[in-house]
Length: 266
Image (cartoon, rainbow, N blue to C red; front, side):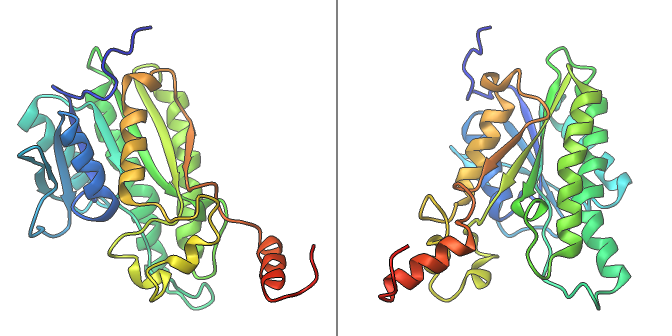
């Protein structure tokens, strides 16, 4: 099979949820740079929009936790550009919260944003993609939290674990017309997450990652281009880890710290 120009998305249309900042903005800019028309969404109108090569994304206000809003988002993309080839379900996130005291309303909102919203937008996108000769590609942006929970992330962890399972279920049902894949992101250096990684800008955190640095949003964006393009035409239901190799085990770090402090060698 000839994949053609796998990173040329000229004539194609991509929707990126939560595409006005952070990882989503980088994903939107990457698709713009590859020639695609891009629609991004959010609950509030941003001051600036992702752009590349003199072209900017189109913004549609939408709270994708609402099924009707999710459907209207896809309708707006098709009305503007006549088709939909790629959906990147990026909108998500959660502040830390104590599982013992968190309110039901908080848990519902976090699960709605990180699990139900991707389902709603994917359903709307599928209705369009399945009718196209070229089909389409859905990419769900997950998190290592879905596999390795951290304190304070119970609802978020449950939702992200569900998103991976949802990806595999949709991949079974919607192939071959629509491929559905998942990206497991690790620690990503974004403006919004700066406070999480400490005053040193994440330098200490980088020491627990085999690649010796935190990811930048563009690392995730490049993975999206691969999963949406011709080189991955037989990739469906996959989970692509973009986390630099994960994190070193705690016992390894403890031994290494002891050695650095002059302790006995391992």
